[in-house]
Length: 186
Image 1 (cartoon, rainbow, N blue to C red):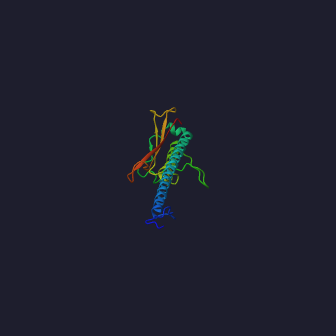
Image 2: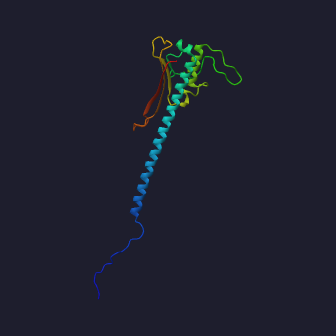
Image 3: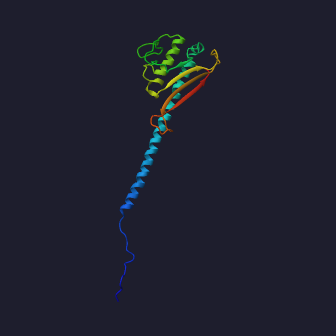
């Protein structure tokens, strides 16, 4: 008995098609792009946190120095400091008030010690590190007395400010400004 027009049903497909391979490649590629984006964001946040830690250490450093040099604080030697002045870190004119290897520290007045403290924290002892050096991008150290006449019970603001590449703007080159502020009574 001959049957005309028979079709073979149940034909099984073997292997995978090119379309399935392309879809798999696209899905894996999108996943890898997502992972790369997360890595970049993590690195930016890590750098931001590291800069915040450095700024906090600089603020604590000058606060400790002010607590040690209370006569300089009472004389107002720290008041109005702003390290953003043009050429501030180019050269320190006063004596070095710290001991270096092979030499004792110079005898410094309270005003000279205050000037040395501000320079050391702002520029580093050698003028190439510190707040204004390469440690923080576009950083500034400001120290101001909030109380008229700066009495012993007066409050002081120590501010370390710096900029970073913007994490919220889509425009290339945009910067965000951050600051760490410490209020103290030396």
